[in-house]
Image 1 (spheres, helix red, strand yellow):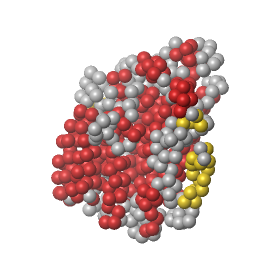
Image 2: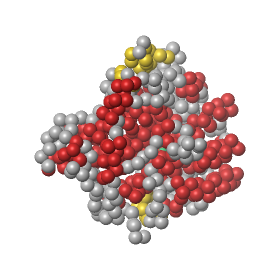
Image 3: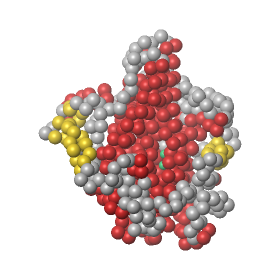
Image 4: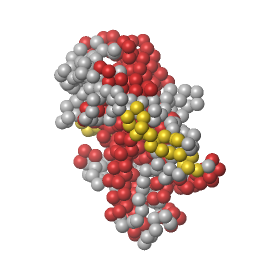
Length: 483
Ligand SMILES: [Fe+2]
Ligand SMILES: [Fe+2]
């Protein structure tokens, strides 16, 4: 095993995990590779597989110069296995093994739990590629088309990262899990992806931007929690994945920001003072802010379900075992064991939503969700509301209450409005279309989804970005459609 940060970029699988010195692992990965490529071609981006795309490829794990840009045909993308450099004498930072050296091999007693954590994370990566596969046909610009494909190839690399861990450390079980990751399919009735939000459709570009804003952000939180792991290879893998994840956040934040910017500019030009005058706004060929709010309500609530139940013994066990920490665990000032500590949890009590102190160990999902909500909230203010405010409109987008539209956890059994006020089942049915996108709303968004493939041009409903990717000019041909 080598722990140098040098990347072997010559073989079939670029890596910094010493694949050349591990023939068993190399064979396992090489035998998984053809099935992977079949998956990519049949369930990855629909079309565009032969077109050169201006993509970023990870070539190093050093903070400076870790990626290079260049035209690549997607099936030729160099999906590599890259781990952040090993930290000398790293210690387990939390749980029952706090202070012990991190594990370089799988601790036998936690084998099943660890395999499950890696498999669940791994399953989300190809799922989002599958969800987004048809979006290329309606891209609002070549810039956006390239960004979609960048996210897709990197999510696929994250699949590689998890498959590496499964095949390297879990023997035959791991190889079977790796096969299953290619077998399950987003939205499939017989063999769906493991988590709900990853079986939802991503039918249009607004959904894509909302997904990268809200759901990729859940990915970021989960990766942060796993980056704290006492199982060092998992920690190193996730730390490197986070460098790529930052760009996915950017695409979601700036994507929605550009939609809002365009809508506000069009309303101004048309002399529209009331952003809730939906008919007039839509007639301009831009997306009205109330529809943006409903889409945000949908994607936020679907994503909250990914955090699982507020009270969870699995989360407590994974923490105690030292496998999955809290968000920024190493920056928290407490005993990192949580024995006897409590944490405030929103619960349903006598038919009302109330705050309750729960054992902190059992409430770890709730805590990670709270950290997520705070992170998303600051994104909404910084990237969305600031744009509306600057345009002079008295309208604010906001995150709905955490009890709104939930399928998992404390609030799955109740209905609330976006402010968290309880609604009867009848009232929910009657008013649902006020809170969540209606068929009409979705049909309107769908009607805007016409492809724009001319370099430097953008669809009517989205503003151009401030700057190009890798400093490229506005009319840069990010995807060569003739090539
Ligand atoms: Fe990912
Ligand atoms: Fe991502």
